[in-house]
Image (tube, rainbow, N blue to C red; front, side, top):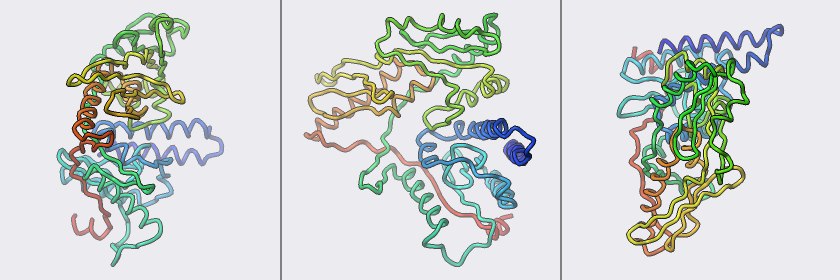
Length: 373
């Protein structure tokens, strides 16, 4: 909690400096953004990508802390109250990601989402206006995270399906960064699979033209993909954490945040293709490119128009995960879907529903906090 107070102080100071006409406004804007990205590290550490996606939907630029005045101090007080009750509070306005609630408080077996109002509690909730829309958005997120099913306004139903996604090997990334720091060339690389390499480059030392020496032979790649992981710092997303939020040393996170070390991924997306059998049924996975994004189509006699979307495929592109591990995950998922379609006797079939989370959404008012302290 203390470091979030320090982070809030740093953001407040940057906001004050931005009002000084003698200061470089573009540099301060970048500085404020990087401070909020530091706040994201707690989000990625505690919450699943599914939870982050739900609570970041419709995200906008973080609200000004100066403009909140004493209301922000009240948020900090509520966060400390959550901490005393055994939660790890995430203060949403210190992140780029969180868009529901003022505080998302994590505990091992449950999650609390709190709106903080530095006023006395009303006799009844408003049914229209900004506060009503805010409450509706929070209750909608609470219900989806708990039930794993939601109905969209246009009439479609969204179902959260359990999927055992492969996870990054952070020890491998740590060794890569260590080798980069100790290398005379300022460049190091690790092989994640066939035509699949992760490259670290010290921007102040390495000759950019030498980076290509460490990439796979692009002439042997059918669907080459070049990813600059530093882009995740500019555009944080639920799919993959920015390199500055990796569980590596504090100094390395700082170097990644300030782009003193850059991470690149060069891979051949064709390695997600697979031909296999499920209970005697032939199935094929085929990687396709759609508007500069990659999806994987599932081809079988019992399903049609079935594919894994770019957002799922991005999981293995923007995280340091071997494509071979993601391919195995897709094979398992496709097998499950084909079995369900066959058992249903129709190309229309129900998806398995993920176990929901223990989530509570609510509003904390000043008089409630006073009664609890």
